[in-house]
Length: 263
Ligand code: F6R
Image: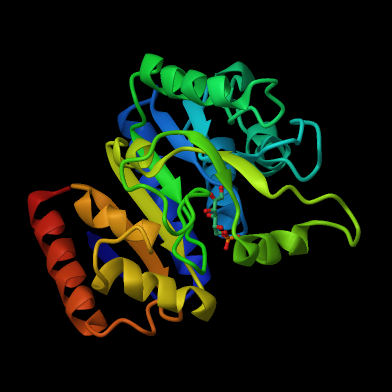
């Protein structure tokens, strides 16, 4: 894993956006894996700005989102489809027919999960997958105990995740407790994975991801198996790492090597 520790959440968003900008400049028809939640919002703003400045285009891009609440239609303001339209798709030159979010309103959710896997495969696989991380180490809605080779499926949310996400729902509003999520195996199939984490609330999860054992108890620890996983985190999220000075040293050496090779 490449571990990039930056001073604050704004630097994390900028660094993350630059990875995606470079990806789109290198491969205009990239297949992007996208995430929702608070963490990627500033990164999306960076992509919107780059699109408006004509540094990148989305007109050949295909996207697949990690997850969706089961039981919400895409027009529901709390659905992840709605979130993606609001936070990114409505502001860039993307063909919405090329944007995929697991169908939370599918009549047969189990069949829909296989259908989602088939769509990712038909698109040629995901070039780069964006991830946030839950306080409990979840990626997508792969909660602790998720199989490390799991595929897209219906998952029950933990009470911790429901409580964390309650902030997006009005008091008394129906909040789903089931989701459709890409599996950990689906995520690991992406050619590159970029996980962003900011704030002290994520420090335990980052510690377990980077310095803990490979275990279904911390789904993000599965990224230890990936050959091109980048963790972009701020000082607060890095605050419980034992070896953060070493990770900073590695990153400084990487930067020097990249500069020497003109990359
Ligand atoms: C979102 C997702 C989740 C979030 C995670 C962190 O599509 O799959 O894993 O990335 O819950 O959420 P925030 O960024 O709101 O802290």
